[in-house]
Length: 385
Ligand SMILES: [Zn+2]
Image (cartoon, rainbow, N blue to C red):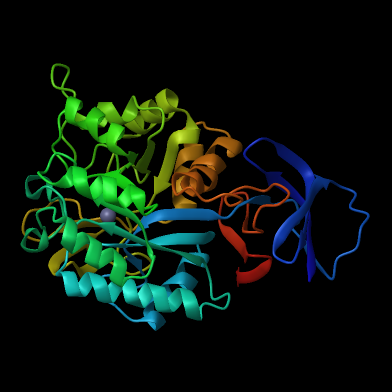
């Protein structure tokens, strides 16, 4: 099976090709070049001068379209969400859970595992599960339900990970908690990415966590010790550690645009992973929703817990995140690194998240206003406007 996408502005992490083309064979990018394309392909897509970018990869999303991974624990719901993500140019994602009873988390993992096994090109690819908690700091719960936040317990965590047959790819832990060290070491030994989040660790504790194996910041600055010039906290430790990827919720609500800019300029786009932290209310109208058993009020797309007013995820989508970052003056290449390549690399996945020979043919075609026109996953069209 071969396909050529022609006559578009091809954006990769290294270059922009005006009037470029991409040849795809068996779901993999076989050739990237400048028109005229003189080869043969069974299927031809004319991009009509639009942008051809690497498909977006969201490594932190809880739900979309009225569904979420913690509440809707069946493979059909997961596949439905995969379809909804594709409408926003997302070609791969990690299903994120929130703090919940252990058996609920186990069921959520099982549903994602089954959905991965059932997946036949319905929308975005499912990369696995991101457990956001339950081993986080209750003082920094944010919108996580304190009733289900737990103390780090290695045996319990092992059972959870093992019962889910390798589907857990990332876990968010507060590294300052007693027993967190062992969890981090164990997770790393199983190839699970450890992200520091919902934490009030100090700068020093942050550096220690990085030494132990933390390689990611869970939505940097949100749910973290506040930066102070005499007590910089874990956020600065993560920012200053060159091997740590930094999640940023680029809705300009969770962080001031100037802070987003500061992070990108300091860490460079290669370390910045744009995420949505989106919840079930995404793609839905304003109203009352639920997250981890807590009531969430969504007003003008902004999600807050009903009783405390704390931000509770977002209704951001990755195409909007791309647009927001571009509006700060970053190039299309830089935006593509932060929405695709850095997310893939933050999970240790190779040949994903870029438009280069040998990479999975996961692509989004965007119009001049960055609206998604087509989404292609492994060389198959999964969404068309
Ligand atoms: Zn989250």
